[in-house]
Image (cartoon, rainbow, N blue to C red):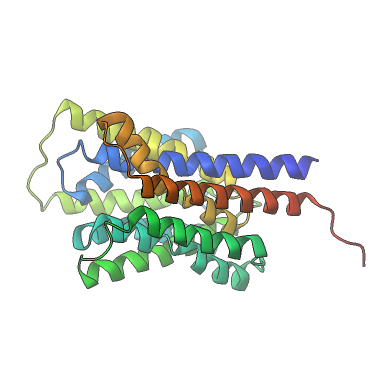
Length: 288
């Protein structure tokens, strides 16, 4: 019963993480800065929040701890670059081929089996994503599309390396990733035109750093200790589903019927797969 409750809490924490990740686009629209400047200052604030939560971070320099930090930092920077070089829809949908990568990498490095519910969910998620972004796909630059796929690959490694720390404290890896991103982003800002600072931009970047990244990091570190890497990455694909919801609530831009249908398919598929996986994890192993 305790294992089942822990697995359910892990699923809910990962879903909360994805919802918080999804508000990024709405707040970024308010900030008229270069993407690297946004990424740098967002990570600076987020890193401060995580440091307050950790109080005394423990960096033991293990391979998973360092590798997870580097993988997340590279993912954030690649995704920023991809959004500059291809369409936003292409960048999102190509990054979220991640669960497929995670399934193979997790099986190889973590010995976590890919279950039937995961494979079925992959198919439904692919269909839902295609429905949501069908009108916006295409175009963009080949380099940008390649960068988006690479960001999906590094995102997958991030989940796997974080899962390797399920018996430790993975939050330090997230702190490291934001230290790297802040250094790169703010360092690049020194060679860019000075950002136009307004109260709206300051408020938005604070919200991104504290809530969208800082709080989500705490939830993610909790979740990844309780659900498999492939399950966590699969749940994360609900992030783009919520993007149009926030835009509708804030700006009144209603999503299309096709987008609503695609989003519903993704949520149902991810929820069903998560429930089946949580129940499977809680079931006692058969006696041989």
